[in-house]
Length: 462
Image 1 (spheres, rainbow, N blue to C red):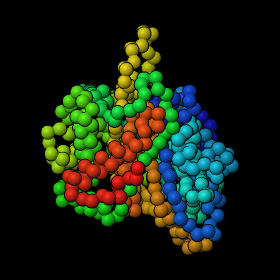
Image 2 (image 1 turned 30 degrees about the vertical axis):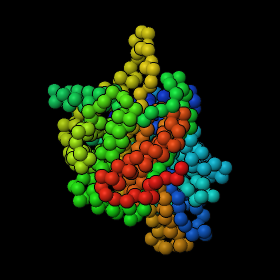
Image 3 (image 1 turned 45 degrees about the vertical axis):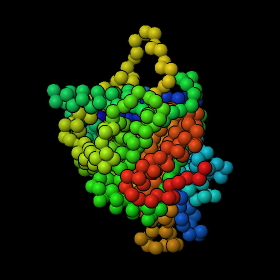
């Protein structure tokens, strides 16, 4: 990692290719003052009424910033600067107590962020972390919240300051991707970028409102949470068939899209593929594969494909195999070239030629991201080793998502405290809530029918 030190306790580095892509994407709608694809994590806390939770959160939030200096990085022209922050400066800029709004109110108009923010909602005892995607990924967000809550029950160090070793490098640097290309790297990058471009071009989403001139409205979400019994039955059914729950959800999503295309008389499609986020963290060398580097965007994407003529079970098994075998040494070594191409395509000056005509119907699509079992990186129960003041804090509910300002729909799946949840992020300008509700129940309906499980709690009220 090339990092300079312009002043004591201050560093600077250029963003990596993936970080540049996420940074560019986040500011697509900067004229509105809102951020696209901004990450949020919302947790409901349980704790003894005697705990001064605001004081504990404030102190823990600053300690977290010391441990993870990337939280305090400020980007200027795709250069990340890491200035020192005093306790007072950091907390005044980034911590707040909100009594007038709910988390949903804030997320609906997710603001452009120079720094991440932590908000406490005393009425509902919720905390909400907002952080730009160039700075962190979904699993990293959960790791940060987990460490934050750990710090609320620990004796915090005095006058600690971050060192260069605490700064998380870009994905390409953490992965050890070579600076120079080879014929194999070029070949791998050609294949990956071509597949991604084709998948994005041919993506099929839900029917949406408006046309090319329709401006975005509020970011919104809807979700379905299964009971513990339903989750156990679903997991057991998937195991019996030899595929994962995530693969089953992917196959159900593809089935819903196939059915929609037939119903709406689109041109027939023979297969379905969408871009799916995958964590690079398990494949990185130490220490970058640990929570010590939670504050980093260590994520990539794959495009599993299922064919219309295959059975649900065969499609899910094929997708499950893809999940297990997508990573390779060749892919990891090509990361720098892949994201260099992507970032240069977005950031390079465009020739002064008339822009191509806008398509009459802007593209849409549904992407899927599986976070797995949240408790693997956010344990949910935090107690002081000294058992002082009964200082135990637990998390009773978890929610993750992104702000959405385009026609894209992002479907998340995860399990927390033994309950599977499907959550959809979308924009109200393009979809009615009833459309999204029907979409979610269609997915669970496919799972019920194909796996022989009853998911009655997924039938949302009208």
